[in-house]
Length: 94
Image 1 (cartoon, rainbow, N blue to C red):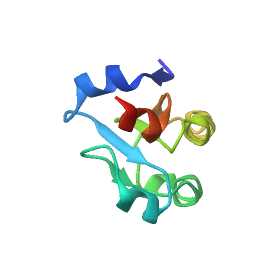
Image 2: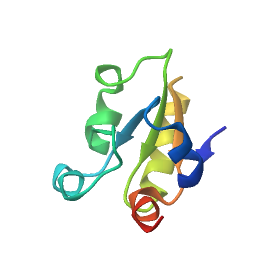
Image 3: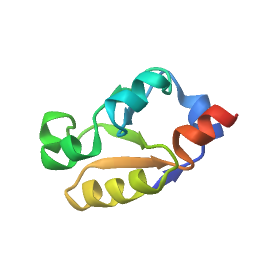
């Protein structure tokens, strides 16, 4: 599975690892509960500082396009990551 909807995600919280890849100021304005903020450039430059190969991570941005691309790059390095479709914007809407 490469993607998950916000409705599916809500049934899994709090038992999963969620990463918000938006900038710090966006995260501070609002975020998905239990998520950790790791801006995209930090995550892609040094994923080993934030991820391990055993766990699965659910990743989101504002609308879902940046997180989708980020997930593709991380998957190519062997990480288990799932994109949250629609991102934080969709989470706020529901």
